[in-house]
Image 1 (cartoon, helix red, strand yellow):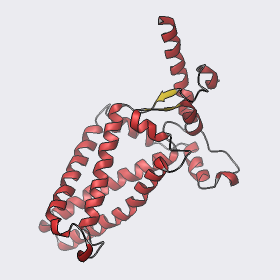
Image 2 (cartoon, helix red, strand yellow):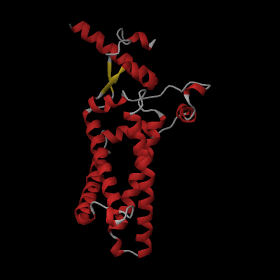
Image 3 (cartoon, rainbow, N blue to C red):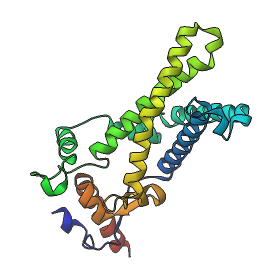
Image 4 (cartoon, rainbow, N blue to C red):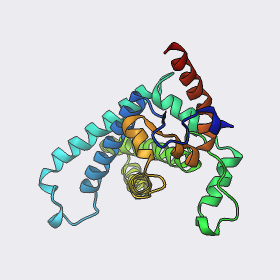
Length: 235
C-alpha cells in the first residue's frame, strides 16, 4: 500500500529527506575530529620506531593538534546532545534495539544466498548502524576518560596513569575496525553506497530506502504523498 502512496515512487529519481543540514555538519565534524585524533594518536604512540616515525621531530605540534581535536570533539558532542539538537534526536533513534533489530544482526552474518529468512524491515537506521553508533559513542567516552587521566598523569599515581595509557591504546585498536568497516560500507559496497548521498546532500532515493530501510520508507511515504497532493492543489 505504501508503494501506491506516491504515484512516482517507482522512479529512481524520487528522493526522500533523511538528514538535515545540522545532522550532516555534526556528522562530518565528528568524523574529522576522530580521524585527526586517530592519525595524531598513532603518531604519538609507541606503534612505530622513532627512526621511521615521520612526525617524531614535531611531537609537540602533533600533541597540540591531538588535544585541540579532542576539545573540539567534546564541545561538538556536548552542544549536539542538547534538547532538540542533532545527536539528541539520533540517540533516540539508535538507543532502543527491537526484536527485529536482533534478528537482523543474527541474519546479516549469513551470506544472502544461504540465508533462509529475509532480513527484517528496518527503520531510519538499521541494526548495524545502531550498533556502530553505540560502540563508537562508548569508545569516545572511554577515550575522553583515559585521555583526561593521561593528560593529568603528572598529578596522579604512576600506576593509574599507566593503566589509562594502556586502555587508551586498546580503545584505539578496537575503534579502527569500526571506522574501517563504516567507511567500507559507505564507499565500497554497491548495495549500501547510495546511503552516502544522504550524508552528503540530505536525501536518498526512495527505491533505496525501500530496499534497506523499508519500515522507515513506509512511514515517510504517506508524508510525501500528502505534500504531493498539497502542491498539486495549490498549483
